[in-house]
Image (cartoon, rainbow, N blue to C red; front, side, top):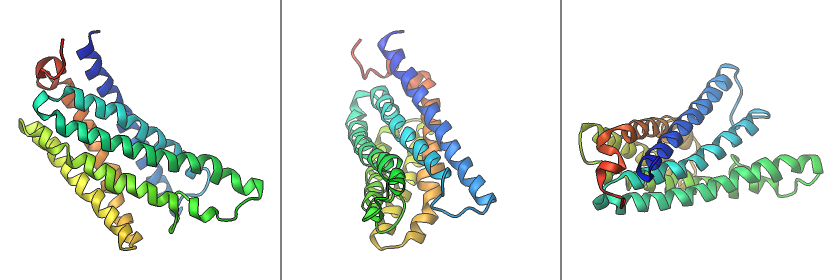
Amino acid sequence: MDKRAAIASTGRKAGVGYVALSLGYLVMLVVMTVQGIPFPPPQPYATIFHLIILLATLVMVPLWCGIHLATQAGKQVFTLISLMFVGMLAVVVCANRFVALTMVRQSAGLGRTAGLEWFQPYGWPSLMFTFEMLGFGVFFSLACLFLIPAFRGNRFERRIAATFAITGVASLVGAVGLFVNSTALMGAIAPLAWGLGPAVAAALITVWLRSPTASPSHRGSIAA
């Protein structure tokens, strides 16, 4: 497999992985809703959610690398900026979920819970939840919005751009909800901004990476 084909293949695999993880997250939400389980989720749901989000956020990095390297050279400035914001997203969100899986989960058993409320992954006010909203509400929003100029081509690419535009704006609304202390607004926008929107975008990108017109070998973005 040459370098160009490897780029497309890696991007597609990351896209499939992200879609699968997103669907798993949405299925868990449906199960909780049917069973009348409130949010934030109790154990063992909480651990499953943390693992899914941790893995999904990590998978976004190779997915965005695939997007950047498969984009024609004249538009790569936008995809590079977007990729940098995804990297920033991955750092803050993974930090929150790793803290939740380790320190927060183990503190009760160790009998050391003083000040633990500041590190809760979902509670408010919480330092770690603020970091997560910085990631998904600001960094992810900018990552989506900066991809719009990179997909101003055929009709299918314009659909991708529209999906990223809707997702990016919805994510920013979620950040505004935190700024005005409205958890209700964040809860209302969350399924679209951080669930269905990104999953649809990843699915479209996966298809785009399979098309001849989107293949790096046809875009002239990488030296042979």
